[in-house]
Length: 148
Length: 155
Image (cartoon, rainbow over all chains, first blue to last red; front, top):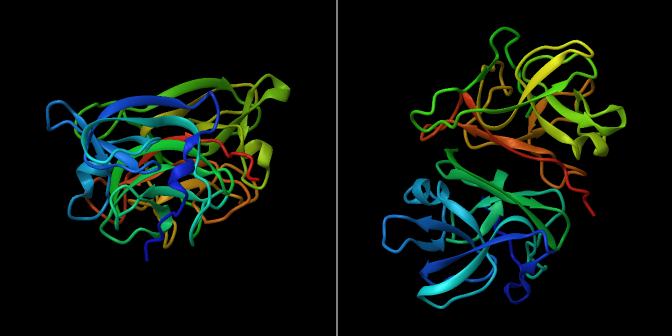
């Protein structure tokens, strides 16, 4: 069963000045800490929360671009997302970061991270990164969207 | 699950075509600091001029200096080419030892070094190598999509 990450969205931040970021236009509401994909089928291109389920995931998981660093409540708003380096995903809830664990795009709720090995059969696996410890997450985007 | 069992002959192939869904292999070159075989995970040892050696996950220093997967064989002090990104072809066999689509692979802790294994959760250190790439087909895969991330220092 998919195990999704829980974290404090109000405290999501770049971990240091080595975090590489980009800015895009939102295509939906986005919460800080969500993994986003770039929808190039619309003009202008828009970033949206990504999902890796068997129904919609191949395109989304195959187009992930980063993890949102701020929240927006709708479309056509500026969202900054981390592309590489370390970010802070402080603990909250039942499933906080665990050092050494690899996380991928969830196949349950769009935008959520999930433990990569817990994704369901039929999902399209794309790695987002690895937890350094209970707070720091190291991005390592691999948008292969390989079917499990 | 066990380490990948990579064929001893033609077990590793570089992807050169840019057609379809595959990404061409990105490679780098170094000088071998020991005997290396195709498909083995290697690290750069800064204490000996960044000689390329077999890495093992049980050694945190080695795991944190992983640089790629060997594409050829080399004896000590011979040149070695290794893959750093893109797709590589892996021919694997054996129950529980076959490259599988959607599985994340990392440096193994098996003695001897150089082996590739599925990730385990909550390990002491994980050097991620990539994901089994079967495209839209689940099950056995022929390619590993590399996304090498040396092990962070787990705190």
